[in-house]
Length: 72
Image 1 (cartoon, rainbow, N blue to C red):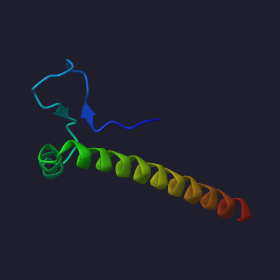
Image 2: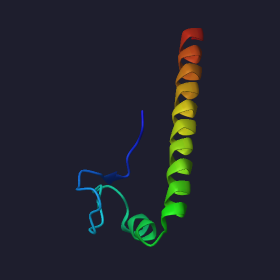
Image 3: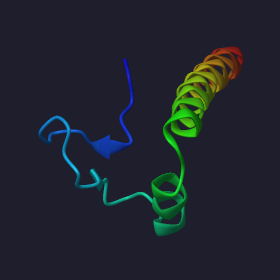
Image 4: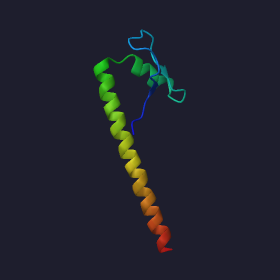
């Protein structure tokens, strides 16, 4: 599954910036808008890896909680 930071439904080669999701903080949106293509690719890769790590952590915590509840 791949997360998307912006609304990508726009014509190819558009000169308009994509519309950010409403729940993204303005500071993050502004920083991304000021970044170049290479830096944005690095941010996207980092965000994807971070999301996967956090999901894995959540799964591990859920497993540990289930095990604790089973012991009680």
